[in-house]
Length: 527
Ligand code: ADP
Ligand code: MG
Image (spheres, helix red, strand yellow):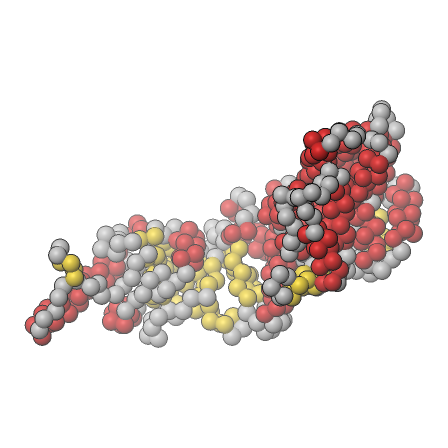
């Protein structure tokens, strides 16, 4: 498969400045769609790519795949726009990347046929636009609303979104944890990926994956004599060290000439450090995090007073702690006040399957959750993490817009039927483009069927027939490799993601067609 892709690359990379760029975009689009085709759906295959440095990359993710493409974006605007389409889909929702690329590429392919028949690009883009609007209507008609309490459907949505990222297929265990996590995150109003912390601890099984309120970080207290557990913690977040400062005079560094000087300097340092530590204690802090160092004497001093402290905390973690607990990031300890501290119900060291983590529980009000992923080796955990990102994206989408639609290509078949019917009412050559759009939509069920080992042609025929007979939820049940009621099988997707994906794939396709039109016109007026 790597060979396949490299072949494409040289094909794309072989373009010189003299190449005929106008009209090429459709070919490029089709090639890219072809590339991601075999990865669609839960039974999609992983692709093995060899990157520029000869490193092997194995992925099932449309976005990762496109990231490996080596094309000169200036020469092939179509490729650049498709990569951007994948990127925006990936960033905004995490899911639906492959479908978006496949749809855009197929729309470009259909457009090529129409262009060959003499249909003007603008006519095609108008027809595509009309059809995309119709798709949205159909999606609205087929959507059902999920209640926030309907954890079963939420789990299904999550499971389906998680299934397409790699060889990782969730049997519902992880999806259940994700739904729990989403319930915590939803308290913040909107579910933000940033508010879910993921720690990966190799070993165990997926069932050992835990979700906890608040933060769970890979942080260890500095001193063995420090408390393991602090209830109703008052937390100081320091962007400075707790160590001796080199004394400085206005004239520069202090120069030590003899033993007296040395003693004086030491005393000065000790006094300084002690003043700082006393200020820290006076603020009422009983847990201290610093992104800098905490010297040995300071550690002992803190341990003696039952203050838990951790040093060299990653700045990103420090910021997270500050946000989650309401602490201020303090750069100057001497002026630290009680109100600068954050608070947590509990800070404790916790053994998570052999990994020593620090839990910071911020209570019922918390809008942050931590997931400790278990099960398998590091590589498997990375794959799970990618799945988690997609699952969370789907949960966030449903939280924003609670409608879900049948997956497994069912909605696409229904929409294709409705759009073909609608095409009859469209006047002019736009009608052809509207029909072509319906055909392109069917690439999704067709591809899912193919990847699930079904005959794609027979599959489409059966799907069309049953939808025409009113079976609205019939699609490809990819896990069992059969055609049936996908809603019953729990294959549902957020309507918002689907609608957005179809809209942006159409928009990008249309932009590519119009750029081509301009390029062709400026090249030579041969049309
Ligand atoms: P994308 O990057 O577009 O999300 P995926 O590889 O995740 O690509 O595939 C998504 C498609 O797979 C959707 O059409 C979805 O409905 C379908 N799908 C996911 N799980 C199943 C399943 N168990 N049965 C049938 N179709 C499924
Ligand atoms: Mg997916």
